[in-house]
Length: 318
Ligand SMILES: NCCC[C@H](NC(=O)CCC(=O)O)C(=O)O
Ligand SMILES: NC(=O)OP(=O)(O)O
Image (cartoon, rainbow, N blue to C red; front, side, top):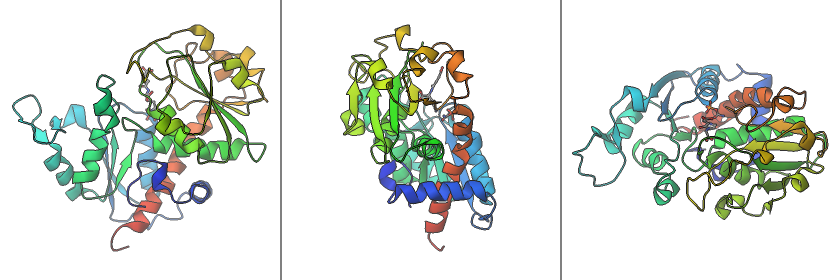
């Protein structure tokens, strides 16, 4: 594996899931692999899970880790080619990424969609520029379009908790006070379309995702119908893709509650976190035994460890 940007970088998903579960069984068995290797983690946006779990995964593999909150600690990075840099950005990504690539063997980058300029977000500019200029493998820690470490985690977690070979997995939109990116639902859809699951997406009208990501998924505006017989409920808010970055509904009828969970096949409740309690999902669901959000977040370590291991073993000279 060179870069880890989407499911397209994974030649064999079930082999990668097996690898992650093997890392979970034996976390320190590959401690030699990362010796004298450095992982740089660059955050243009806030994080709890991604930052700590990726750092822990790297440490388990014997790597050194350097973390930078780019927007707070470093120079403002200009991303645009040919920019006349007489504004507030002090350094171009051509130099910035190339220099960080001199210090690191692998670089992780988190940069969310701005949600104002659809065309710009669709180009996934920040992560693409790092791939172009850093000269070392890049791991997406959530870009404008995708969150592949989260999606791999979700596949691993479904594998662990499923009670039938092909479970019914429902991605449901839920309300939120803020406009959020489409990266998590885009990416979850892409990965579910590769995994062996019966996949359904439900959301209000106006929340259609880009078909590039939803592909062959069934889509319904009827949340209750989607929940019937489901084995996994995966809740997430996202802002509108058509009316780009806008909130077109805050309808509390879409909040996940115990009554709706009764329609399911004792479904497990999943969310990538952070989650707004009693807006996205009621306490009665999040605090119930069916909620697996904490072990799901725990699995972020094994997803990151499997990916870093794959990249380390493909580094030149290995
Ligand atoms: N990395 C997981 C989700 C990150 C982000 N959520 C958020 O920004 C939530 C912020 C809040 O609830 O205020 C998203 O939806 O893409
Ligand atoms: N799920 C997730 O990526 O969490 P953080 O935003 O806290 O990293």
